Length: 457
Ligand code: ARG
Image: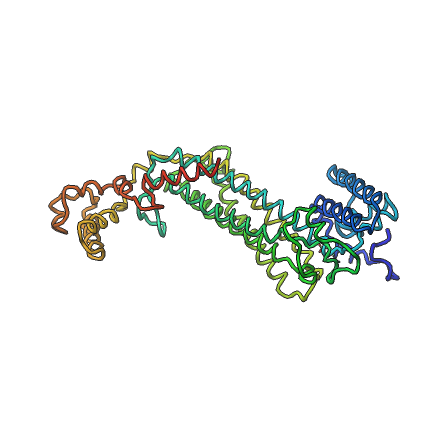
């Protein structure tokens, strides 16, 4: 097989070099985008008169056949043809002869690979976005069903203040919402056409870059050909966005692993999503959650991989860039796999309300509510803080709760305390007292649920 760039070479390429430099083993995933990009390029070439309309039709049609062949797994991939671009072009030339040899007019593999990547990432963004939406939907459904359940809210993994379970679920929705916004923002920069920047300097041929951009649904055309040839910022951004999604999934998984432990016992996970032990018959392990946590490492590593790949490159294209796809595909596949499991896991999990309620009044979750009660009676905040701190210490020494103290004992600590104090003591009362915008009490949480439900329609 004669190489597309073989003209100036006298010796055949060393087999070891072919093996070392090939990218077909991973970039065959770009086939669909490559064909779509090439069809748009051919249409543009005909429009500006660089090929005839008949040639255009032949090229577009034959490319469509090649698309089918690749989809059906009928194309044999070979190291000596390097990459997906060469495979498709050489098959085209094999079939169409000189007409096929015209396709690469006014373009280089440098703008071609960037175009393919951008088309691929654009689709990937839309796919990840739809999976994130599905996870959000699962959390919103849970929020709507769990709105009577009060949970201990934690900071430092220490009991802090009581929140409705729905508040927890919707907190994850917020994180995934920011992830979706970040992807949408990244998509704007992805959606700028590199095609026609050619190798690095553009071309003397009368190509129409606006036309290919329009045909491929790009929102704009990249202004500087040198920049296009070297630019993988969009890819770095995309893998970062993926890694933040992975971080969110990982800390959610971590929380549920803790909640699923015998010590907590807050959560029941569906059998179909847990695994057993080969030696300990009683075990039910949250392996899926552990792997969601574990796999986040590779997604985060991909950011480092891309950044290090980029940091030492002179303008413009350098072959190092070929490695970008390995990092991106792995990060993408990993996040997609995690998100696909996250939604059914959320839907299948059940809070163990009895167990949660058993200990709900432990840990002074109502201490802050009592302090705020004092503030409402006119006590300066810091004074109230000190007063309640002393009452907590008293309860600890007696192994009792704030609500177990008599009115006299409470009044000894602060004479402004009245009988109405009973309305803020106890975890449920303390939760019901939360009214500020965005807080974990019933009214603000119901507002949040309604907001999310209207968004999820
Ligand atoms: N396989 C190459 C890549 O992924 C395509 C671009 C090759 N360009 C070149 N000038 N050798 O980056």
